[in-house]
Image (cartoon, rainbow, N blue to C red):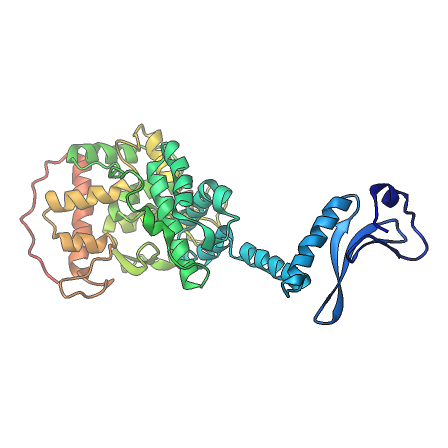
Length: 407
């Protein structure tokens, strides 16, 4: 006799589990605890099996019968509904393991382990803000170009066009990693070329006129701040390293007697050598009693075990009254040196580029060499420091004759 809702509600628990049959193999298993569980008894390959459909009343009588009918169709087609259910669950599990967020975080951990912490944090933050909320749970192989573009357009509408482009670029790296690891067929972001409006090139704010540089140097000398930040400010124009490289400078990499600073450039993955002018060595000797007992040249204000904040130099420039969007930034010391060294001091651009730690092959195609042009670079760095001193003192600077290029 088929079950009814009225009949089911009257069923009481007993000392042992018992069954109440419906139709076509469907029955209700009543447990000693009072549970009423839907089960389907069926045969496949001459073996009797059971399939669970949930508990009453969460699964109604009508729902249980509908599930039974679907299962019977599967059986009639020669398939086992239990095995089919396991395959579906396994597929969902695989989808979860291969979701865009899982693959992106795996790529981030693998490919960015040697990058600066500040850069790593910016990359993962872009994913968390602009891609994961909409694409994170989707299997990466199922994501389409229009879905990615939809997420990127949200960023563009926030007036963050450059961020949208960067997000597209890193998403492409994740897709290529997915292809390489067998979790996607192709990089669908390649279909988005030209989908976003182009960005306008924005150069880092920098001074390139001698009178502006002279005023800046005098302002730095007059800066009233911590010894760490003051020395970092003074050293920035002398070595014109990337701000992240300067703040992460370690005493172990500096030889004050030889006047050199050697370190690994994570951006271009090269070992780099900086000849230190006598003025730079003097600054470092002044700072050594303060931080020489620790690892970092420029110790953090809150912890001597960490380097100073990545925003310390820019914050100091702002305190001095400079607009870091228009006037000068910590990174702008590089542009300042590159321009003036070539235009005012007639230094060979090849020597300048080598000192800037740019990965530029020579005319023979040779890879970057940390000691290439080292003699010329030693002369240039001292000449540059002396030039800055003369500017600061207000002397009239006469450009030097053009130096001959040498390898």
